[in-house]
Length: 161
Image (tube, rainbow, N blue to C red; front, side, top):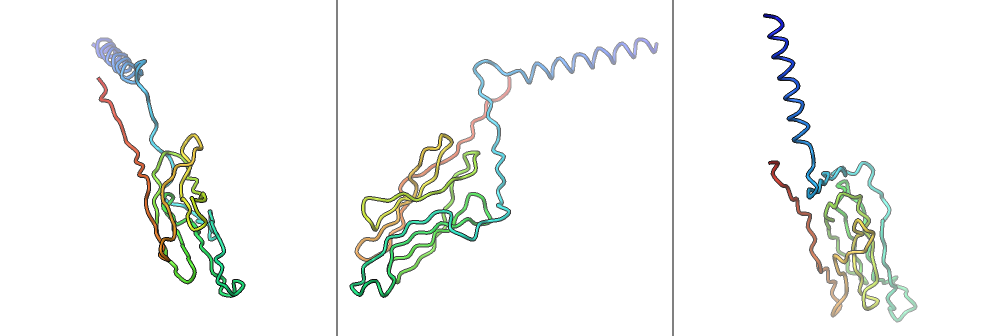
């Protein structure tokens, strides 16, 4: 009787193992993508700006007022969120931007725009290509902060058959 119970137990273990192996086999047309492993919180955000753009503004008095058009980007405690400080002459503004989670540590930078009072905030994708995201400029003596492109991460899943 014990032999029959052991034999039955052995057969069920072998069949369960074979079933597990069959379920984990990837089909040739299946692409497996790992979930992002980047922490949502940043342990030690830098107190210094990670990106800076600055152009002095002539005030007609040898720049006695220290006027400038400046954009500084700072890390926050959230990995994909950044604080943007903007200055034009005596005008100052602070904005927050969120970079999409592409499964890599974000690299945020600033590129010059079409004029001195214009710059583009963006980030690098997985291939290291700069992606335009936010335009910061001055028009009619007013600061403008405009999202020029939208990016999203889409999660695809295929049911296991």
